[in-house]
Image 1 (cartoon, one colour):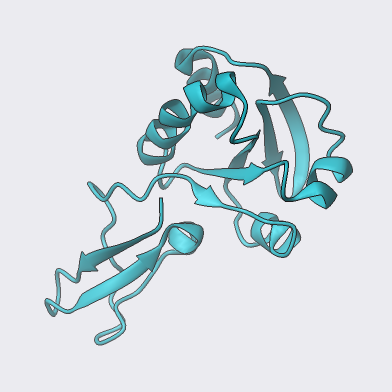
Image 2 (cartoon, helix red, strand yellow):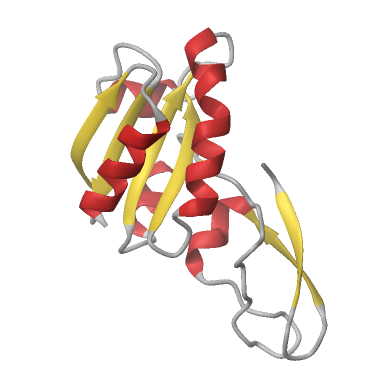
Length: 147
C-alpha cells in the first residue's frame, strides 16, 4: 500500500504514516504522542535494495519478507494474504514485500531461486523460509511461532 493519514487521538492533528515506516512507532508531528495504528490498514511495508539492510536492522520484531514478481501468477494470488497478515500481525511482527525483478541485489544475496519466497528474519538474520504459494494459515502459524 502507500501512505495513510492517521488522526492523533490526543490533539486531533492529521498525520501521514508511510507503510514502510509503520513498524517504527510513529508519533504525532504536532504533540509527539504515539499514534494508534489499530484499525489502520497500511498493508505490507515495501523494501528495496537501497533500504534492505536498514529495514531489517530497524526493528527487534520478527520480519516476514515476501520476495515476489509482479508477473508471477502465484505471487499475485498471495498479495491479499500478505496484506492481510501485515494488518493482523501489526505490533507483533513486521510484514514486508520486495519485488525480486527490480531488487536483484537483495534477491541474489538471499539466494532467491523461485517466487513467491517468504523469508523470516530475527535481529537481521534469516531464521526460516517458505517457498511457493501456501495457505494463509501456514504463514500465520510460522509468524506466531517466531513472534
